[in-house]
Image (tube, rainbow, N blue to C red):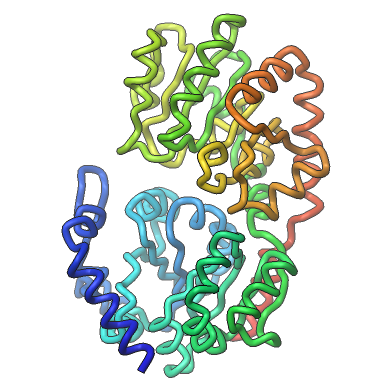
Length: 420
């Protein structure tokens, strides 16, 4: 009965907000949006290919979740065929570039008849959901089909937990059907059990983000990146994953630092390239910039705005100091381990609740700096510019913490393999 009500609610929601939803999922220039896949309509060639053997179906929402789980995918694709589903177009776009040989589709609407059809077409032997995505129809129908469904790298922020508590009547009926739930921390394990998960099926595995950081530190070579971008051997400050609400503050910090120091390069990476107003804000302050898509350029570069996807990691690898966005606008923060994976000094704002587990490890043990506002961000950056040895020491400490905390993916891989 509860799933019938859930289906009706979703259908009503889709009809009511269809113009807005269609705008988000339609095809756009540079983005493959195929709305048909979201209702389980695939190309005949793909359907025939998927029928040949059982597949591992991995669901990840967007860029961050995909990049975090990428090392696990690399291990699983040896001897297995992978199908990855995405909610967002940006996640799909980055995956197209990094995993050309792996099948990629959009995640279906979680309506019973659509989910049943998609499970049949994708032909999974196991379903893996990255982080904590609770999709009632997918979970229940996987259980009915005797297909193991595992939640990996599970996380529940305090905000999410408070929201889930309001629908505990639903989560209590759904979560017991999940085969295995692997949470980052003991605190998050307790939260998911409270919401209804079967205690014996929930374990603590640590955070994939430490493994991903270690993997990136070995995959990406900073010297090759500098040569690729034709960037001189100058100090580089990166403002990564900057949300629209943070752009004004970032431009202000850059303007003030530029007044004090000439021999610096600033890199701004907007979180949402299609929604950024960073160009207008820079022009308003008469700050000259170059877009990443126009590089390399003959003129000296002072400010680079990255208007391409999937390159933030490259810039983190060659920077000296990095501010990670989404952390001074109440959003909850982006991944601070990305710059730390290259031994770089990282600064985050006070709003890091989405990555509290990882950030607390870094911050409390001297591997990162937290600031309350943009004025303090400016002060800390000036201090680090004038004390480069301290910045390097913070970066080294952060990398040591990555080494000490990696291993979550290997634990998870062993559990997944036990189902084959």
